[in-house]
Amino acid sequence: MTEAPHNDTPALADEARRRFLKRAGLTAGFSLFAGSALAAGLPKALDEATSSERRWGILVDAGKCPEGCTACVDACFEEMGIEGPRVGDNHSRPDQDSQWIRKVSLKNEDTGHALALPVMCQHCTYPPCVDVCPTGASFKRADGIVLVDRHVCIGCRYCIMACPYKARCFVHEAIHDQEPYMPRGKGTAEGCTMCVHRIDHGMKPACVVACHEEGAGAMTFGDTNDPESAIAGKLRDNTTSAIRADLGTEPGIRYMGI
Amino acid sequence: MTGKRGITSPLRTAIAVVVLALAAGATPAAAGDDIAPDVPEARKGEHCVKPVPYMRRNHMDMLKHKRDKTMHKGQRKKKYSLKRCMDCHAVKGDDGDFVTAKSDKHFCNVCHDTAAVNPDCFSCHASTPGGELKVQSKEASR
Image (cartoon, rainbow over all chains, first blue to last red; front, side, top):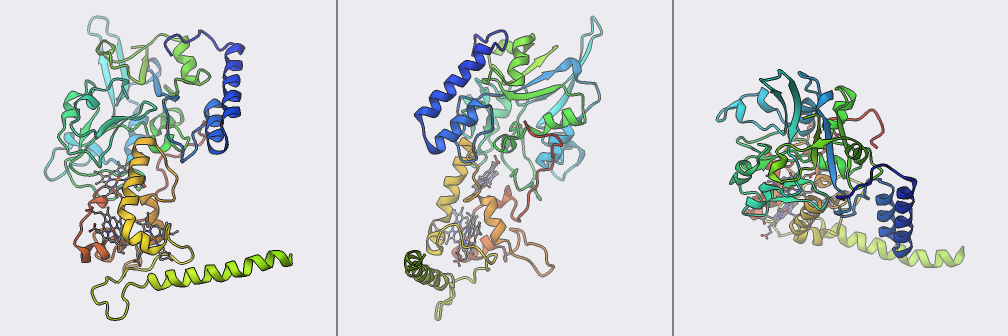
């Protein structure tokens, strides 16, 4: 997808349709359904394995993100059942608690220009956390989502050190009353899952939903491989970049106006 | 019509025999079998996701298989999910609330205590049923 066309020409839509019809003609039954879901940009079937035909991403328009608004952060904490920095604990400091997403404020001292933006796991195409993981617990799904398989994580914390975005956290304390759809536990590394439990059900990540319904609508979520998706359109029409693009991690989270 | 009935009634008898066999198998504390744990009853109405002898022997492998499919490939059909076991196998305590994995009455603990296995699943996974997403969207999702 390096040579993205500059606008959605009808020819492109036709091409997608042709591709879909070809696939539909070649496959049958279950995979037919899968193929149609893909071509139409619909969520995958529940039992379909995710594939590299999708690349999930989020575009953050930093220009729209107001200083002081924490709708995305609050939604993440609520969805994931993270009590977070607000609650202290016996053996660890509150500032050691998990933060899967945080608002970062920046100011250019020379010009006085100030900027606030949410930073979470950047879901890199080349994730350093995966490179350093000794057990294979840190991994990247075919559709680009970077996760910790906590069943395999031994809590060595290499990934936490390797991540240039400081996006991974460590669970220091035993956790109780987890959300049934979001298991979390002591002794493992964790981080933003891009709300994979929602995406697999065809829903948007909690932060993006909250940003639109309570915040300023600065976040766009979607499949960057689908030329007809809103996010692909915005990436095509605007100058966007990644945090620390110089590192070559090629994040799935991109920013506008930074 | 008559032809159809002719096919279904032997089938029905066969099903009844299977169900009876299952029911017998589902009573672990058979006469003279003192050490068998008293497994809490599941929710009435439906059967388990596989026959009982298979479940007793293979549930750990099933769960691990499902775990890898869900974690790595995002395959989320509910049938064999750990979360769904709790929908049918949750046990109520004396206070009328569902017991958590801390209780020795919890479905998964009864056999494990007897067999001296201690899987740590519930240090992360919720051990009671439920699970509405906290952040609900007002608009359609896509």
